[in-house]
Length: 428
Image 1 (cartoon, rainbow, N blue to C red):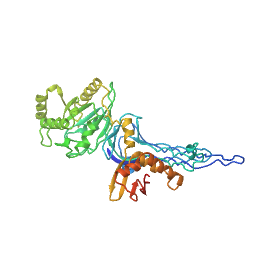
Image 2 (cartoon, rainbow, N blue to C red):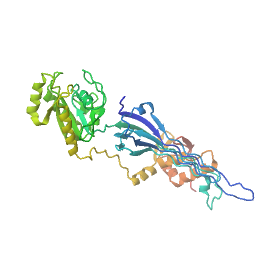
Image 3 (cartoon, helix red, strand yellow):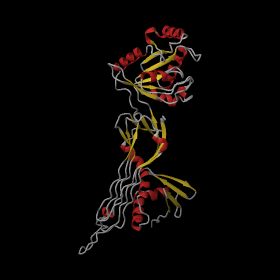
Image 4 (tube, one colour):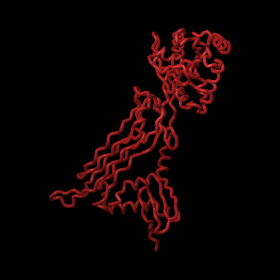
């Protein structure tokens, strides 16, 4: 089964917790804190595997989670970091954020990788908080939560040559004749509901990959039928073979078909309309094809139209050699991967610092990456850790921000799963 789109949930592993521990040895008074740090959580990483051709696996595995890091131990022993979760994807896979639809990565080359969800760092043990002012800290940090998000995976088939044309033009029959691919072939529209790939091996020329793109219809550029799903698969081809039913078996005019398909390509993407294109007049084994072939040759030029019969094989070998020569003359830099969204480091830092406060009656909700991270890494069952949180909360100006937003003593404040009562001592 060919699957070219999947929505999945990814989560990096949480960091391991730091620990509170003190050195306990005979004849060593006041041994001091020796709690180790937790290990880093694993990342979720997509890696391109050239042997894959579909996103089928993600239909049955929609949740991907990396392992959490190991907790720290006494004796200044740090927890072991978790292994990354490697997820294989086919070449041509685009990763988009499901909420914003921003392109995160375009994976086109074998071995290319992308960290889609970072693991959280390990929490620090109490040994890391020792200072002249506090030589025996009795608190540590919990591990940082790993990143989590929903993403869309979209596959754009990578092929040298794309077959385009109306349904029943004979594309699948042509692909079956020239490659080892065995697409479903039948005499009714939309036999092909997903792209089929095959490799053409000719004596004396480099093998090339050819893709049978499902039949287009009028309005495909606007998503009519399965237009968008079909058209994205021709975006990365270097050359188009435009298969036209010269015999007009379905009652359509061959020249009108040719012009309509090109208009759909142009409306969807101007670059597609500019790709080198070979016009292939198929079904010339049928008597009624003579009129259609003559019409195409008169309108486009006899040298630009290749008459073939995908059923009998007439003219196919000549077409393939011509296609191979064209490919050899085209630059190999194409297709070009799309550029993912670029985030400036200083912009990321600014976003980390930003805190928003919203109010519903007497409840104030605070949101901000850095503040939420502080909450997640604080052990609120530890009194010393709570006092540290309160001190940082006050020093970062959050108390004043709440007061400016209208918070009064006794109001409720919520940050993530944390809920507490706002109380600010009045200045004397």
